[in-house]
Image (tube, rainbow, N blue to C red):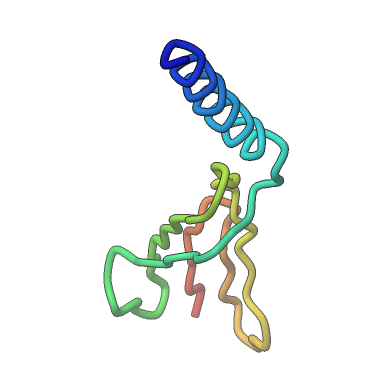
Length: 88
């Protein structure tokens, strides 16, 4: 009887481990936080400022970030790599 209980316990543990790991494989990546940092706190007229982003989340979300500037009336732009260029 003791041998049967051991086999059942091993079976249940293996079943739970396998099923839990399968659950994570089926989940879509979910972003929980985006941390943005820069090489400086100041950008001078005509200068550049490099921004960096770290995307955190569940199931290894993509680290791709779409950089953009909104509500600007200047010649300031930002590249796809996060480089801000102040042209004035």
